[in-house]
Structures are given as C-alpha cells and as structure tokens.
Length: 146
Image (spheres, rainbow, N blue to C red):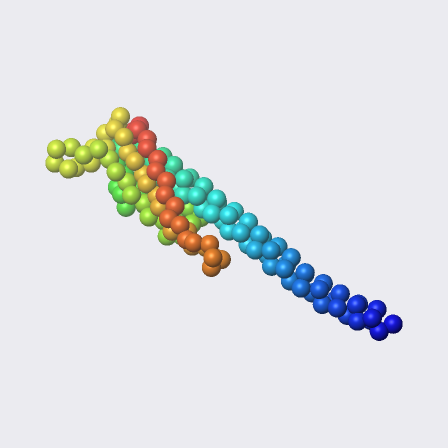
C-alpha cells in the first residue's frame, strides 16, 4: 500500500515537469508564429506603401501642374509623397525617399516619360526579446504619366 501511494505522488510530480516543458515549447512556438506573421505583414505593408507612393508621383508630374484640377498639388515634391505614404500606411515611422532623374543643374526631371523611384524603409521591432529587429525596405519605380 505504501509503495502504490508513493508511486502516485511521484507520478504527479512528473506530470507537472512534463506540462512545464510542453507549455514552454507551445508558447515559444506560439510567440514565434505571431512574430513571424507580424514580420510578413510589415514587409507587405512596406511594399504596398512604396507602390502607393510611386502611384501618387506618376500622376503628379509637370504636365499635371497645367491641369486646373491638379495645379495645387503638382508636380509632386518629396515631402508631399512622404506625407501621402505615411498617411495611407498602417505602419508608423516609415522613411520615404523619392528620386527622379536629374538634369545638368541637378534639378529633378518631372516630365512625362521620365522614371520616378519611391523607396520605403521601416524598422521592424520585435515584441519578443530573442527575435532580432530588422530593417525592412522596398522600392517601386514608375514612369511619370501626367
């Protein structure tokens, strides 16, 4: 009788240890999955922001400034594109860089048919201490249409 009672008590101690190990592994996998999903979402949002920025820029070239409906926001400047991208994005703290071809005086060429590139970067901060942060970047290039 004593040995059976001792065996049951010992078995419950093993169950607690097993549960602790399984729970640790489960929560580790759970947090890693959530952080992976956040990382993929952030990368997708950065790529979408770059596409939105270039879309904004290609319809606001020098020719758009001649249109009475667009005269107030064309041609687009770096600050306008950055502001537009940051307002439309679900991420905070995006860094937006816009580049055009330059003429001989280092003035951006914003005429129809010229390329414009919008690069967006974002510092991804992990909520889990053992997963490092990452700098996410994306660039999109388009041809100025209007």
